[in-house]
Amino acid sequence: MKPKKLIEQFWQTMESNDFYAVAQLLHDDFVLEWVQSGERIRGRENFAKLNTAYPTQGTWHFTINSIVADGDEVVTDVSVTDGTLSDRVITFSTIRDGKIWKQVEFWPEPFSAPEWRTEWVEKM
Image (cartoon, rainbow, N blue to C red; front, side, top):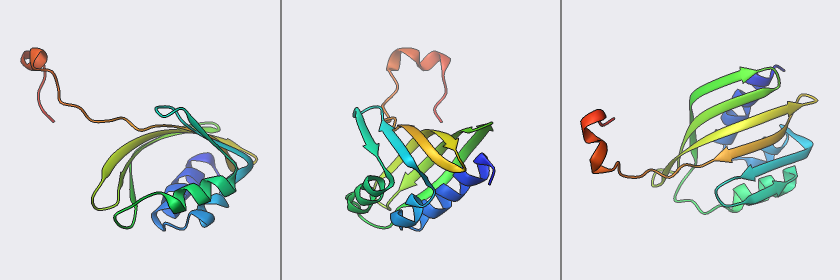
């Protein structure tokens, strides 16, 4: 399977909230890095257990806003919600041997724009 299709399948399977099924798309040596919190998750089992235990108000939903692929590297911009919480994640995925070998995720926190720059910007 091509890397872009594999990552599309990853997010589609994440939508099922069956994180053990998602883990089947991961390489034996899978590593996930959460940059903001300085955490590294090693292995499919840890990935599945952590996501299954993650506190939620409802079923997780994932919407791909953008996906860019270059060889074995795929970058996604994904909106994530459980119906109460809404976040956005930028994920850099590296494919090896037809599986997801490494992911580096950035979960940016929204913030209010500073007043000083209002003359040069418009609200989205």
